[in-house]
Structures are given as C-alpha cells and as structure tokens.
Image (cartoon, rainbow over all chains, first blue to last red; front, top):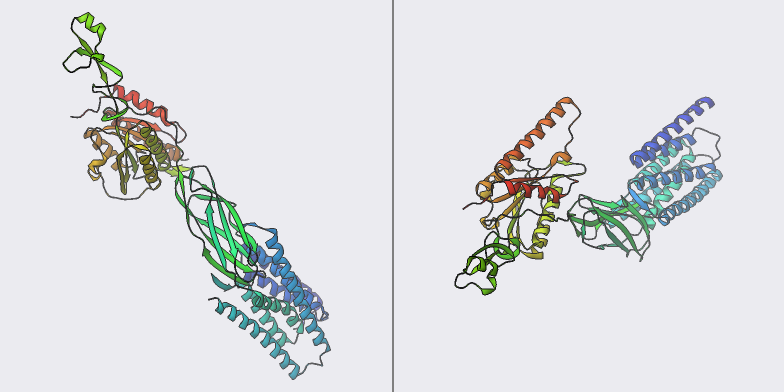
Length: 150
Length: 425
C-alpha cells in the first residue's frame, strides 16, 4: 500500500486517535480486547513509514507490551480496594524484565533480518516456518497449562 | 482452584499471530519484530507460571455483637505452591454486612509464605449474619494464568438489637401465683397493705393490727397484697412493614421486643414470644436468662414473609397464650389481619396493649398535592384505627424510630388506669 506523506500523517493521527479511544474504553469498561485493539492500531502506525530503521521495531514492540501491561493492570485492579506496593512492584518489575528480554530477542531477529540475503521464496518459507513454530509452541504451552490444571 | 488462561493472554497470542501473518503477507519484517516481545511475554508467562496451592482460614475476633459495633475478620492465606502469585481476596458476606476496606484486597504471596488480611465487619442491622468463604483470584507475576476458587469456611456472626433501657413497663392487670415484683390484686402474704378484717382462727398473731383492735374492741388483722409475677406474651406482627433506606418498622419492632423481653424477665415475669405473620413461630412462656437468649435468637430469625393466608388467634397454640397473660402486641398496624387478631384477643378477655411501631418515619408525604392528600388521609385512617382500639379498652403506645419507648408505655399506663379493666371471667 502506497500513501503519500500527508496521507500517512493523517492515517497516523487517525490510528493514534483510535488507539487512545480504544484504550480509554478498555480501561473504563474493563475490556482487555479493547486494549488489544489499541495495541494493534499503534502497531499499524509503525508500518506507515517505509524508511523506519529496523532496529527501532523491537523497542517499539517492548513499549507496546509495557503499555498493554499497565492498561491490563489497571483493569485487573478495578475491583480491588487495597493493594500492597509489593504486589504492584513485583508485577511491574516482572513485566519490565520480560519486555527487556523480548526486546533483546526481537533485536537479535532484526539483526538476522538485516544480515539476511535478499528476499527469496526459501527465506520467506523459513520465516513462515519460524512464525508458525513460535505460535505453535505458545499454543502448546497454553494447552498444556490449561489442560494440566483442569 | 480452577486455572484459566486469561483473556489478556489469548489476546496477546492472537495479536502476535496476526502480526506474524501480516509480516509474511506484506513482506514487512517490522511487524514480526514488534510481535516478538508479545510472544516472549506470553511464552515466558506460560512456562514460568506455577500453580499455587492456597489455604485460607477465616477468623472473627468475636461472633456476637450489638448493632453498630464491629468485628475484625482476619483472613489467613498460605501458599504451598511452587511460585509467587498475586492474590486478590474478596471476602463474601451476607446482606446487611458492611466491610472495610470495601472491595477485594490484593497482595503478593510468595511460595511457602503466610500472610494475613484484616477486614472490619460492621452489621448494618440486627440479625444472623455470616462471613466467608473468600473468593480468591490468583495470578502469576505476569498475569498470564489465573486461578480462581472459593476457599475457607463460613463463620457465623450474630448482631443483637441495641435495646433501650426501660424504667417503666405496662403493669399487668392479673398476676400468676409465682413470686415476682407485681403487687397482686388478691390478698395474701406480702408487703403492701390491703385492708383490715376481724381475726379468724389460724391467723398469725404478728398480723394483728393492735390499733384497730383497740378501736373496735375485737381482734383485727392486717391483710396484704402479695408480690407475684405475671405472664407476658410478646406478639410480634410480621405481616407487613414500612421500610426506607435507613431501616424498617420490623427493625424497630425487634428492638422494642428485645428491650421488653429483657425488662420483663428482669422483673421475674414469664415471657413468651409469638412471631405472628406470614409464618408463625412461637416460644412458650418461661422465666430467666436462658429464655432471654432464646427470645433474642428467635427475634434474630424474624422476617417479613409475604402471605395471603388469613390467620387468627386459633392458629396460636393455647399453651403460648396462658390465661390472664398480659399481651404486648408490637405492630406497625399496617395489615388488617393483625388488627383483626388484636381485636379478637381483646374480645377473648386478654389484657392487651398495642405498641405501635410508627411507620410514619419511613413514609414520605410525597411531592404532589394528590400524594399529600393521600398521606393526610392515611394518617387520619391510622388515627381512626387507634381510636377504635382504644374504644375496645386496648392501650396503644405510639413509638417512633427516634423516640423513647418508656414514655410511650407510661402513656399506656395512664390510659389503662382510666379504661375499662380487661377482667374476664
């Protein structure tokens, strides 16, 4: 999809507005789905620029994750009258640590992509295989966890 | 406890999957790179999450209290599982129990660690309440997996009605032949002087009135009134009530009944209780502190039970209404069945007093002219009912929510001195 600079700017503003509204609605109504719509909108904005440096994507992704985590924390604590600082701190620290690890992994992948030869059917197939494998591993873990405790 | 993959995790996996597909379709690797932290997060959460084995105990610092007081509920949690979890604890309780702090409490519970949470539990009205169990929602530190369940037992909490201290009670017309504090109408061994009569064989010499004997020339003896107890039946009308946000007439009626029961038992009367409404409950007359506890326990269970069933005096067991008993009917005078029963009791010769728990405090006159007119008519109707009862020789004490019961009862005593006594052969 090709858009000119002013069109991209307008789309970016529109995406930001959609993200803001979704985030507000999600936190007000306690809906994680609306928060994820906001994350998707913000992720879409990143694609509007074609000259973006590849290494910015991991930081952007980690930032999105942290934003999502803070929004979900707000939703989770909606019905909670009292919460200890220790609990808040432990959850935020865990999210920060995992976001940092995720950003590092993503940066390593970005370096691999940057060093990779030009796009070909083989490279695309390899990428597709890696993506499917990653999602399959996560889904298997989720199924095992969910099934084990039933 | 049941484990759930949180909707947040499902959303993250879906987002990451969509981003990967998008990256492959559009040939933009940035999308995959953005999605990677999300995937790492979900994966790490699923790998690292360890199921907690939570144990919960609930304890109250006291299980009996008065209205307006509060108890402290301590919730003890122990995590015997493999990892730290964030636990949200919501303490369940019955209606009319307020908790402080409001809402759930969130804490971090590491593996093998015990923790305590305290809540102030305040009953908003008298009654049998219960605290527990707790609804526990535990999350791993990343919030990826959630375990939910109800843990702990149920602890009963009884809130007794706050009673007024009564200095004046309705004096019974008839007494029973047991030692008590009422001056009986009959003559016998006692303290209160009754009359002087000629000496008969068998009279004790110490009862001779020497002055009267000297004046009349023949031996005269003093007669006295003995101190006897009486039977009191508390008749609680639970057919209907007027209620607003601050409470209802039943709340006030139970407070009045508890205060009257305590005062009557303190003056050594036998007290019975009849909960007369949609359902019928009763306690046979008895003396003493045990009976007071029985009555208060029965009062805590009283409630308005809606019913179309017509009930009259014949539905009450005879042994609960002993002959010569003083019946104190505590009623808001809102239901025709209770009015009919009061009139029926009077016709059967019972010594009867109505303590009207005024519903006026719970009813607003309304804003429109029609409402105001209806309210005035209703008040007139109530006054007519009261006048009709008084014409039957029934004393009516009107007691409002914020008033003292003692002066209202004193008004009844004044009425009973001038009214036709309820003596029945």
